[in-house]
Amino acid sequence: MTQPATHILRLLGWGRTLARHGALRGIERDPNTPAQVRRLCRVARIGAIQPRAPDYAGAFREIGPAAIKLGQTLATRPDIVGEDAAHNLLSLQDSLPPVPYQAICAEIEASFGKPVSSLYATIEHESVGSASIAQVHRATTAQGRQVAVKVLRPGIREKFARDLDTYEWAAAHLEALGGEASRLRPRLVIANFKRWTLRELDLRREAASASELAEAMTAFAGYRVPAIDWDRTNGRVMTLDWVDGVKISDLAALDAAGHDRKELARRLVLAFLTQAISHGLFHADMHQGNLFVEPDGTIAAIDFGIMGRIDRRARAWLAEILYGLTTGNYRRVAEIHFEAQYVPAHHSVDDFATALRAVGEPMRGKPVSELSVGAMLDGLFAITRDFDMQTQPHLLLLQKTMVMVEGIATSLDPAINMWDVSAPFVRDWIRDELGPEAALADRLREDADTLLRLPSLIRRIEERYPAKGGAPQPLPLPDVELMWERRTANPRRPVFGYVVALAAGAALALAGAAQGWWG
Image (spheres, rainbow, N blue to C red):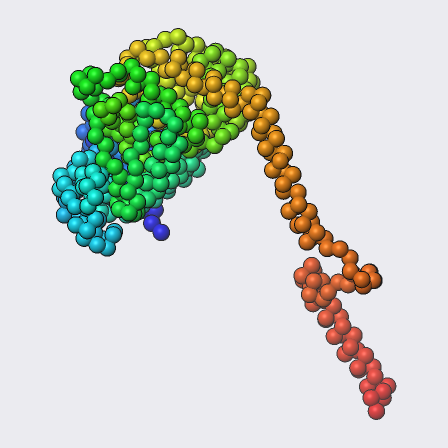
């Protein structure tokens, strides 16, 4: 177990880095920051020269891979880090200098227990992409198949484990301070972050996620997930089809290739909604570096280390919230928040509906270049404190991905209206999944399942209460208090009884001797 002193030293070291980038100033000035955290910040910045403009992204990059991932998550939480910090963290790119090929080659051979030449006919020594957790090399199999080989950085699992240990320790102590720190639930935020990152550190799980998403999106035209080469995939190495295409962020190349950017923006938004609302499984790392446009206009996605999941009930709430905001039905949106217990019951539904109107009404009918989903989330976060809403960690990935999708769609088509694109899809889904026919079908299915379980239930009851046999019923027996039970109930009483019995016995013996009873 890591000692508290080790955690404190790590935090102070990270604090020094944050101070050099001016990133502690906002924490110290925030009135909701606990006094203990302010003192730690003051100690960390002793002697540090702080720039006027904080560079949060630069600080997280310098701290290391785990901090980069954490910074990308916090970029969608202005209620935690503040609007300025969140905006700055949106520029945080997950890229690091590549590891030398010799180390990557050794990692591949150690994980498979065989030479690289037996796995790939050729493999390029220069990486085509290098992130905080892994890097990618282009290769060709013996069958002539063009593939991408993703390999974990050597020692990355150990480094993440060390940093996550300190994140958990710090979050537990921060939440224990109470107040605003408790409402934001930092322990749950870090627990979800840990689950996401540990999933990224097992490339077999990433491969499985890619395979599952490919099956879910089979019927969606114009969106592709590369196929996995399972024979050349394990926990540290993943091999998948190579993607030939233009990065979706290269607008000039897209125009030169004759792609319709407005159609790409629309299709990207609908692909995200299909994943999140229809299937409850979505690609949660949809930044510009992970999306390509192939020659035929198909959007190809890569890097499936971070995947989001939403259960059916939460998807129904999400769909109704989005549709309510787009149609101005703020009362229904407020009711959903109370049904989902996002807002404590002691608050007024009407008051919350009015607060939502203040957030949603400026959005309606305007292009995303003026007001956006990101602005809506900022507005929603602004009212969470007034209504004692706790952080919902299971929605963090969804919020993060919505901001990413919006940013890419805006770059492709600055005039896109996210609400206009989303509303028909959400309306149709609500009609199909929550309408009278769907409700009747759900009820029939649930009742049928209940009926099918009845025989098993009856068998379990019979096992618990078996039928009477041929022997007569036993006679009722009186309750007898056992000696050790009595001693347990009153530990002093038996000692006193023994003393009384011993004294009585001694007196009887003496009396008998005096009378000559013993001969």
